[in-house]
Each structure stands twice: as structure tokens, then as C-alpha cells.
Amino acid sequence: MPEPFSRYMHRWLYGPEGYYTKFRTIGKGGDFYTAVSSSMFFGGAIASRLISVIDEGFLPKDAMVLEAGAHQGYLLADIVQFVYTLRPELLQTLRFATVEPQAENREAQRRYFDESFGDAVSLELYGDLSELHEASAFIVANEIFDAFPCELVRGDEMLYAEGKRAFVFGAQDTFTTEIVKQYGLQKGEVAKGYEDFAAAMAKAFKTYEFVTFDYGDLEARPDYSIRLYHKHRSIPFFSLTDFVSDESEKPQDVTLEELYGKSDITYDVHFNHLIDAYRASGATLHDYRTQLSMLVNFGIITLLDMLREKSDARTYQAELNRAKMLIDPTFMGERFKGVIFRKGE
Image: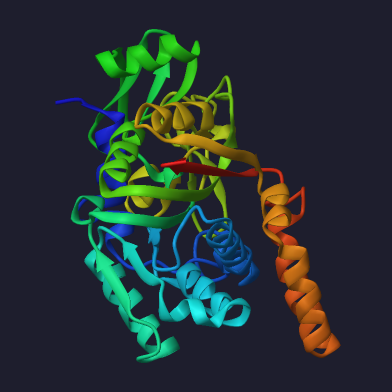
């Protein structure tokens, strides 16, 4: 029986044999790069932002610092390390936590923190936002919304899956139709889950600042962006289906069945939809800009200058080259966007 594409995508990523149900390597040895795998100064810039928010008085010194979708915990660990460098006394008051639905990833996070910090820093592990009821939090996430299941729409239809490779367009459900009409979409992706995630965050924290980075734009692109990442190769999803009849446009070395659950499936984030979902939950949009501008605003250049003053030229140049990937307009700097939401402002 045909199922909406969102369910097909959810099983691909999170089902019993899904891509994210097993620990995946990210970076040179994996399927794709992230800002976290590119440079520790990504976490350093976010740590600088955390300190400034505390200094501003919006969050207290004993706030929870939470990473959502933390994978192995590298980003949160980088934040901890830079807090120690920039404002070590905060390690005595801040609480550090992750929310991660996959048990294997939670265990990897615990091991990494134990290896990195021993008893100096404790890590709280949660499987879902519903487990949290906190007064205040600084929340960070990197590339989580591009993995929310979506519907693929065409006019007043949406895509249904019949097995792993057969697809057909059919009638839209009510939610998809509402989003299509609200944003004037004709072809592309409609994310499912933004509203529930924003509402859960609002329920979990009385006051929060949420900093998140992902690729996409304010306006939805007028075409499909859905694609697979396999060994640092981007493959358009539809090129693996019967919707593409020209054999020259199809990959000759892989099939959809072979990649199902074994490669990442993703799409561009429609930030206006995300922003409206958070506003509906009672949050305010505090900032939206390119990753380049956001990280510079957070102080990444100042952190690199500090490294230059305290390290040898070889070490500085190596870290500078890694950090450039984050802010280079031709790589991550312009393609990725940063958003800050606040509740309780």
C-alpha cells in the first residue's frame, strides 16, 4: 500500500535499518562534511556567543547548555573546551546535556566526554525534549532540520512510495495543503515536524536561546532539492527513480535499493517555514544571517587572533585553513544559514 514520502524518508533515516540508527562517521571518512567536522572553532564561536548571552543577563550562569542531535558529542565538547579557555569559572555552574533519540549515539557521547574530560565535566543524556523541564537553557543544533521527514509536492499532489523504488503522485494531506497554500509552493519539499519540535522546546524550557545552523534559504526554492549523500557524492533523488527516463541522467553505479538506509537523504531547509513554526510556539526570531556573518558576529576572528598570539605559525595556519571552510563564501559561508530563536525575551 502506498505511503507518504515522509514516512518512507523517516524509515530510511530512523527505521530499524535506518541510516541514523547505526553510528556513522562524518568527515573525510564518512559520507559528508559538517561544520563540526571541519573546525573546532565552530564550537569555539558558539561558546563565545554563550558567554556573551550570559554577560548580557539573558541567561543565568547556571543555565543548561544543550546540544540537540549531538551525534558523537564533538560540538558540545568543543564548546566546553572553549568555555574553559575563555571563562573557566563557568564550568563550575553550567550544566551540559544532549538530547539524542538514538541510544548508540548517546553512549558514544558519554564515552567521548569521559575520555575528553574525565570527572571534570558531567554530561546529562536525554532521549527526547519531553524529558526536560528546565528554567533556562542555551540550545545549539547543527544540521538537524534537513533530516526532518518531508513531503515532495507537485502542484496539488504529493509523492507516495510503493516499496523502496516505485513512486506515484497522489492527493495531499491537509497539513501539506496548508503549507503549500501559505507559501505559494508549486514544486519542492514540505517539512514535517517543525511545529512539534518548536512546541516541545517551548514546553521544556521557560527561557531559552536556540542557535541552529543549516543549509537553505528564507524562501523555498522552486524545485526539488532532495538528494542523497554517499561517500561525499551528491545524487539527486529523482535521478534514481523512474521519473527520469533518460538513462544518461541516471547514476550507472548505484541504485536506490542499494542506497536505501545506507546513505544520508536530505534537502534544503525552508527557513521561513521554520521561523513561522517557532513564532507559533511563542518564540521570537532574534537573528538570521549567513553562517559567515553569524560566526564572525560570534567572534570567530577574535578567537583565531588569540590562537595566533599563543601558538606557533604552523599550528595557527593549520587551524586557520580548517576554519576558513566555515566562512568561505564558496564552501559553507553563504550556503549555510544561522538562526537564533529566543523564548522569554
